[in-house]
Amino acid sequence: MRRRLLAATAAVLIGTAACSAAETSSKPGPGTAASPSPSATPITGPYVAVGDSYTSGLKIPPQNGSPLGCGRSGVNYPSLVARQLGLQGFTDVSCSGARTGDLTSAQRTDNGVNPPQLDALGPATRLVTVGIGGNDAGFLDVLGRCALENVRYNLIGGNSDAPCRSYYTTGAGRGEVQRKVQDTGERLTTALGEVKRRSPQARILLIGYPALLPQDPARCAKTLGDGIAAADIGFVAEQEQQLNAMLRQRAEAAGATFVDTYASSTGHDMCEAEGTRWIEPLSGTGGLAPMHPNAQGQQGMAEAVLTSLRQRH
Image 1: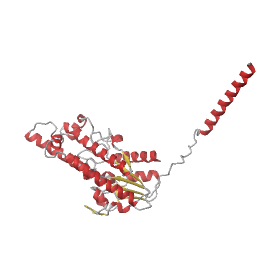
Image 2 (image 1 turned 180 degrees about the vertical axis):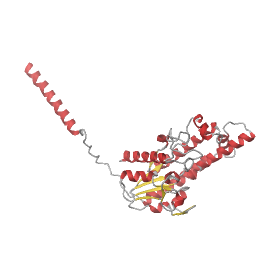
Image 3 (image 1 turned 120 degrees about the vertical axis):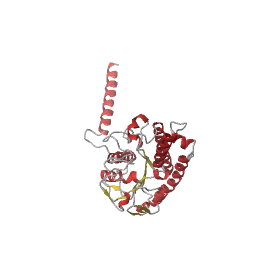
Image 4 (image 1 turned 90 degrees about the horizontal axis):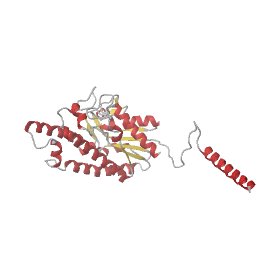
């Protein structure tokens, strides 16, 4: 009996050691790269970037590309992504002020005409980033309206300490933002379908907008001054989140990938100190575009795109 027990114990120990050895040999050791998944596909070009000023990198040096009126920067997020991945065949046709209609029609700028952006696509294109929709939805117009309503409130008074929210929810602008966002979504769906038709083998990424304002109004009192009522800062932030939610929904419906730049930019909004903020304040600094990403913001957006690509890799 003792001999049988010893033999059985030895068999178990040998089997356990064999399994452990097999498991260890199947794992990469220190300094050893893991074998790529059979389903993994390399990130390749040609890569085409389309979009508005948040893509082009308006007023961020060095400014290059043609036409100059598009405000393309050599360190905008498409350029950084292409450089980081070592992609061959990179084309940036983004342009400041672009709307979804400018993807298929020529756009006039203060300095030259930008051809229809989707004309840069072709059957060989393997990666497309699309950063557009904010101008269609009139997001920056909301900021302007909030400033105007705040001035009106300070001059003649009113029944609300959030005059901009009142304007868009119960006043003359009631439902305006929602209508614009809905219309923008429909045009975006058409545009994404056209991207897929022209470049059926391409990975399509729809890029969201970074956080312009914080959720806490107190953090923006100094930056915005008397420009926007403190109670309206949260309202503006809500409108941007609604815009990004629409972009996510349209991307998923079209089979594209939505890239969230809002989450990673939280804490880097225009009300943060220089060196921390990714978005320039209303006054702008160093000749940079107000309420637009600076070089750090473009770097942050590039990281969000690269993270998304690696997750799909």
